[in-house]
Image 1 (cartoon, rainbow, N blue to C red):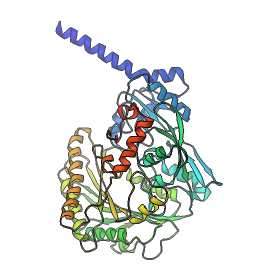
Image 2: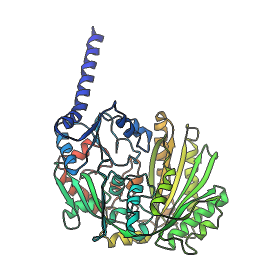
Image 3: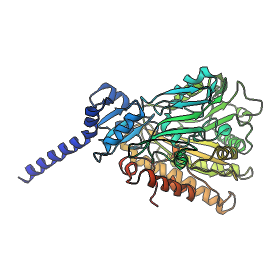
Image 4: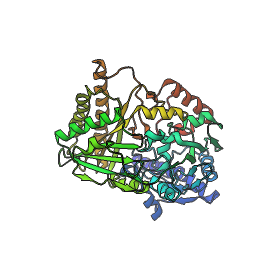
Length: 502
């Protein structure tokens, strides 16, 4: 009898959950003309494959909503207020943190059809929808002779990238990508539509430049455009011998401190599987011109790459060419740490210590099926901070007192069942890098008392992004959140990096 009652209760609960989960989907379908993709459809299944991490794609939304206008997004937000479902908003699906752009059991709002790309030659701006990917934006702008500051890999989506500030090949010329946003169109928690700019809702405008998805759904961005012709770029590949590793770590340190040309950009990554089955360095190079002047990348080229794909090409072709780095079919995790640039004297020891720590921690997970461990050294020279400030600033609010390096960490692997182990591996990797920095600061080998915020786009889900910002920026985020979302709609109903309570 007890089992029968229990089974009946479970059936009732399951039915109730299914009913609640379907509520937004059914209401949107009944009241609006918005496209609603249902789990049994081919389009639904296809859309769920458009995530970088297969784990995010394995989460099953109750439906996928595809609004085509800002007003339709507002209608969805209004309907969501009629229930308590969790939901998610997806641009390109590149963020691998589960529930940030993915959801299980609630509706997924896909911005796929918010895909306008409209260039205005008079104002030299481009209105871009969050449903675009950066290679699509580049291809559309090729014929205009202009470009915008955007992602370094073409497959990355516009929306999440810009709300996380966005690090670009062009950042030493133009700052964070968010520094070139002229205007945001935003659907707020109360379903109202506002534009945020320097002159309209300026506080909201500021917090959207690196504040994530805490304030509304951005349905379009007006971006400053910049003249651009052919560019030069591609990849260099090196065997990760001890000699090459030491030389490359020295080269990227020197490159960051003595930045040779603001038109140059670089990401220096190491990749490993099964300790040494794959053990290489891959560099992503960019120069805003047909050929880099002599001396710009010479310190890297002199080390002797085994592969060199760098050539003169269109910017959109470079971004599409970098899509090889988005390997489908694996679970991904991403994490980060920011380090102060060590001096020339201490650089070899400190850079090697960070690299060796990554090697040692990644080795603890080397037998996880399909594991690929990656570390990227991303220069953050003073020039970026200077440019960002001249363009009005952003949430990261870097000062130009020191050079920095943003370290990106990635672990990819085949099976969800290994996620808990890799979760611990990722935490051990970035926590260990932070400990190395603190140790060298205590010995005065690194400067202490310096500001080291985290880069949101590279953060692992438990990292304290807002806690690492300047106190005044955190307070601004709390103030604006209280004004535009007093009931905690975004905070309670969807994922992402959350603003701590005041």
